[in-house]
Amino acid sequence: MSDTRSSFQVPAPRTDGVSTDADESGATARRGQAPTDPAPETDAGEDAPTARWPVPDYAEPPTGAWDRQRPHSGEHAREPLWPVAEQAANAARDGVHARPGQHTAEDDPETFTFDKPKWDEPASGAAVREAPAAPVPAWEAPPQPQELPEGTASDGFSYWERRPVPDASPAASAGAPPAWAGQPGVRQPGRAREAAWDDSTPEAEEAPAPAPVKRPREPYLDNVKFVLIALVATGHSLVPTLATHSARSAYLFIYVFHMPLFVLISGYLSRNFWNSNAKTNKLVDTFLVPYVIVEIGYAALRFALGHKWSLTIIDPAWLNWYLLALLLWRLSTPVWKRMRYPLPIAVAVYLLAGLSDLPGDFSMDRFFGLMPFFVLGLWLQPRHFDMLNHLWVKIVSAVVLVGAAGVAILISKRVPLGPIYFKDSYAELHLSWWMGMGMRTALLIAALTVSVAVLALVPRRTTWFSDLGTRTLYCYLLHGVPVLIAKEMGWLSFPWLHGPLGVMAITSSCFALAIILCLPETRTVFKWLLEPRLVWLYRRPSS
Image 1 (spheres, helix red, strand yellow):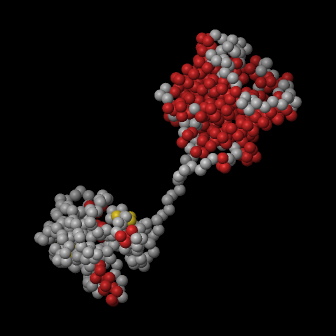
Image 2: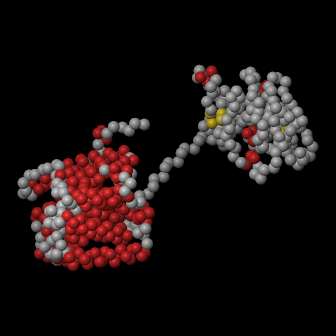
Image 3: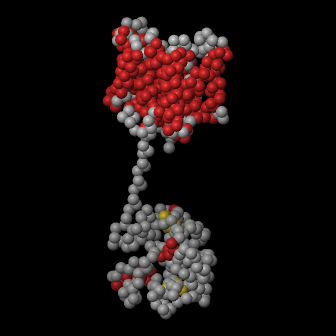
């Protein structure tokens, strides 16, 4: 080997009963080069060193001497590295503390401290051979974990991972403390690698795991939901003025798409509904309990306004149908997600449902009438919404909305309003089965076309109403109270409201009402009623 390269000399075979495969000629290897032959097994007694693998300098080292060639010297002068056991004895005798792998002035006049930990040094008693030069130094490449062979002494640590390994010795089975416990200068498990090598410097504790970063909420769908909930209140408020052309046209335009799009968004948000216990609990907390409360509340309100008392829990009154229908849609989510072609099947069910006179109990008529939009929402992916975020798509969407409004103005006086509720059978609409299916198909295409145009034009950035869109449930369930009072008191029947100006006034008022009912203060007041926390009702998830 060249003199300019530092090397380690392997010691001669021991005579104390420990067998080695060391090359008697003194084979050498570059610094950091792993041994090419496995070390022999050992069956020595209690004080036998670890002959198979290099031992970290914080554990009990081999009793064999180490030879090192000084890199700055041109001569192959050897400096004996005293065994750590003898160092400890000398230190205890002389009162001088020597950390593992370091000489003291009493042991060697030319004291040298290793700059690198001992896991970079070759093993004692191992056969070390000359290896060709590698492009990357071995000590800079991460070592690969290897398993200690059976019968090899263990120091209680996994050599590569620096973590405790199971000890199968009888002492460990009896609960005895590990060999390294309480020893000065020994690194304890669970400590950082930057800990001090002796007990004179406090060891660094493991840094706490960083808290998971909460993913910010996307404002896009919240913007869509607020626009839709304001249109829901507007549509309900326009009913007393439907005798006018302008109000009927606006009503037809709104009802063609606003509930289908609402159901589509609900389906999209239900894709991972069964993956969360909290969302499953909402089937009761957010649907069943509010449904019963709202049913009783509206029955009491109608009775207070002079109507006869009527309460039928199975037949939802007015706007309460959506809670039951959404509950049934979400219960059917696993079925749709298991199907190979869910959307064509949902469309077929939607068309065939018009052949039967479905009752309004449990919202079965709306459940089948709006089913394709919910299943379409389950099928959609985020990339489908991203496809709408192009300038040419927005331009086409604006043209579509203007055209749809124009069509509504042209046909509002000649078409019945029954089909836009997505619940009546063909017989109730006085249509034959083939005309009924054609009408439902055309209505499905029109609803999807206008819905896509609205989705393309709603802003995707955070707006002043993005936060309001997170509380649309309160607006949906509460807006009926002021609207019902305004209808009964005649406030929506003033003559000046029967015209374009009235449509604009009602629409503006309903948007203002939606803002108020979606405020955080509204949720604070009514949360106990509309979102009860029924923790006592559910079992704890098994860990």
